[in-house]
Length: 322
Image (tube, rainbow, N blue to C red; front, top):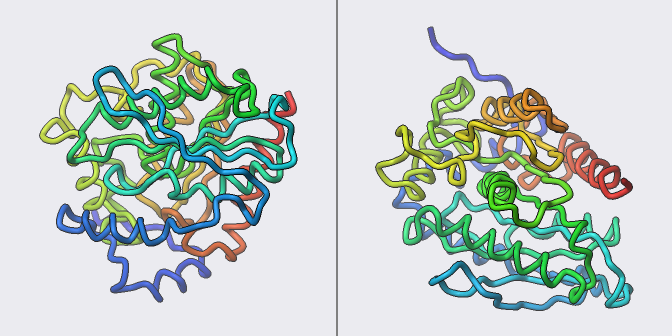
């Protein structure tokens, strides 16, 4: 029986149609270099948000035997150095193969401006040149530095929220698992936006959305193969690479997860939230009707995008008010 895909939200469908032929869903290894060039061109942003933040690039110690990790530090200009503010630790997307610590950081900066927080955005080594565990180990090294130096940058070590979208969302989930298992810094919460969680790429939604939207089953296979090589989909994949592989989701920080109903990652995200609940954990899940992958970046003025962004900041506000 053929799988009928759920429809896209009408506003998003119109935007996707306008991009037809410009951003095809079937991302392959041959497209990696173009993706990196495109990501670099799109990251020329004002990370001060017109003076709301003081921005600094800093290289901190990386994993043992590995290069240093580049962090983008953004502190509110109006806050004293000893303010003890919340810290949003941001992990960028890019399919594990593209992007820098500028990619996608604007939304985290908007949260921080609204809530009075410091932003730390981490850059990690990219696949396929640097397969697992290089990316997640870089992200963990950056979190260690952030927790140890939180007061120095105007933050508080007990008020760190980890956040990421897409591949960055998957790395954020892996980071929470790694920090739990190594008894490292415990984030106050984890915000996972359309996270990339499962290398097996075999859910109903992955098959429904083949050839549709911005990130389909072919693109997903490309990214996971870049990270894992011939281990992808096999029996010995680490949960620190693909968090959906984790046998135990207990003892994790409260989670916010969101995903579109019309995207590849829908079923793995819903499954991950369900397993957090089954393990006695706390999770808030939103499945945005008609949402495609990355819809709020693709169509920021769409009603669905505005609703999704409002839900994220409302969750952050409740989390930080505890």
